[in-house]
Amino acid sequence: MSKLESVDTLVIGSGPGGYVAALRSSQLGMKTAIVERQQLGGVCTHVGCIPSKALIAESHRHDLFRRFNQADAAATFKIAQDFKQGVVNKQAGGVRYLLKTANVTILEGEASLVDEHTAMIQQTGQEQSISFKKLILATGSRPIELPAFPVGGRILSSTEALSLQEVPSSLVVIGGGYIGVELGQMYAKFGTKVTILEGGAQVLPGFEAELVAPVVKQLKADDIYIVTEAIAEKVEQNGDSITMHYSKNQEQHQLTAEYVLVTIGRKPNTDGQLGLERIGLPVTNKGLVETDEQCRTVIPHIYAIGDITAGPALAHKASYEAKVAAEAIAGLTSKVDYKVIPLVVFSEPELSSVGVSETEAKAQAIPVVIGKSSFGINGRALALRETEGFVKIVADPTSGIVIGAQIVGVEASTLISELALAIEMGATVEDLAMTIHPHPTLGEVIMEAAENAVTKMKKQK
Image 1 (cartoon, rainbow, N blue to C red):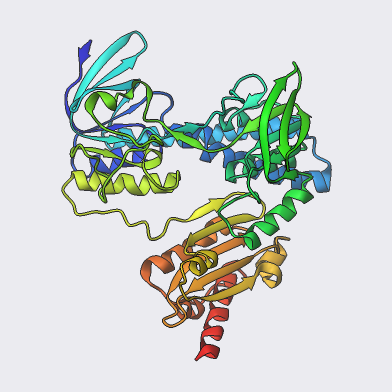
Image 2 (cartoon, rainbow, N blue to C red):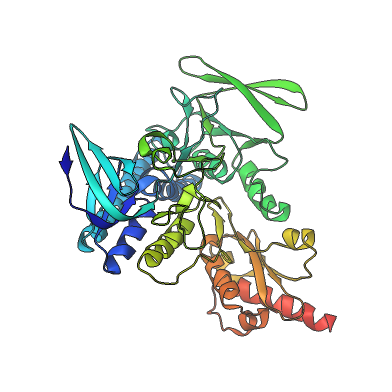
C-alpha cells in the first residue's frame, strides 16, 4: 500500500455535490482531493440528469419530425443515443477540466474510511491511503430495487433504460413519479407502447391535481396507458418478453411487454465499503446521514451533502449544500436555507414548483391570494404551438409577498427561476407585475399571473 500526501479537504464522490464542493474548497485556499469510484461527474452526468434530458429533448424532436416527415424511429433513436453520449462526454470532460484547473487532486477508485482522518483508495491492482483534516461525503444514491423485480435481463432501472440501443416495442413502468413519467413519455414519443403502473391515486404524487391534469392529458395523447392504485406483484421473464402481474381493486391483471422499468425511488450510498460504521458515523433507518445547518455530521470535521442527507434528492440541492459545507470548513458563517428548492419534471408539458403550494397553505391554515394566468393566449406560446398549461402564484393576501409558485407548461423548468428569486428576495406580486417583461415571451405569463393576484388583493380591500 502506498501513502499519498495529506490534504486539507477530501471529497468522496464527484457528482454535482462532490465536484462543486471540491472546486469551492480549492477556491477558498484548501488543498483538496476528490475520489470517484466509477465515472467523474457521477450519476447525474452519466446515468441521470444529463443523459435523460438529452434523450427527452431528442424524443421531442423525433415526435415533431414524425408528425411532419415520417421519421424512422430506429434510425433516429441511434442518432439520439449517439447525441446523448456526446453530451455526456462533453459534460464529464468539463468536470475534469474544472477540477484540474482548480488544482484539485483527482483519485479514481473505491474509497474506504480507515479511521476518522484516513481513507484507503482501492484501484485496479493497488491500494493507496490518504489522510485528511476535513472530509465531505457526497456519495449520492442509486435506484431502489424491489426483491420481486431484481434488475437484470428484461428488468431495468433508470440506468439501463438510458442505454438501450433499440427502441423497445413495449415497456411497463413501475412507478409514476418524475423518473417514470419522464422516461416513459420519452420512449412513447419514439414509438414504444408504454404502460405506467402507479400505486397512488395519481401519477406525479406530490403535485396538485390541477397541475398534473395537463401532463396526464398529454401522456394519454402519447398513447401511454396509466393504471393508478396498482400494486406490482411479480414478473416472469420469457426470453424475448416479460409478463407483469399486478393487482388493482383486489383484482388480478397481467401485461406482457419487452421490458419492465422499475422507478420507485433512490437509495443513499452510505453502505458497502465506505465504512461509516467503522468510524462511528451513524445513519438513519433510511440510510441517511444527519447534519446540522452547516452540513456538519456528529463527527465535527466530517460533512455530508446531497442525496445521503435529508430532503429531496436533487442535483441542485447537492450543489447548494456543497458550497455551504466547503465554506463552513473554511471558517465562513455559511448556513443552509431551504426556503426555495425548485422541483422540476421534464415531462410534456413541463412541471415546476417552488415554495408553498395552495394545497399546503390550506392544510396549514395559511391565508393566501392566488394569481393565475394561462399560456393559452400568450403570443410566444402560440408561436411555439405550446399553449397548454398555466402559471400559479401563491402570495400573502395582506403584504402581497410571494411564498410559492407552480407552473405547468412550456419551459416551466426555466421560468420557475424567476419565481424562486422572487421568494428568496421577499418580492411581492406587485413587484412582479410592475417588472417590464419583454414581448413576446413566455415570461409574460408570470407577469399576468402576478397582475391577477394584485387585482384580487385590491378587491379584498
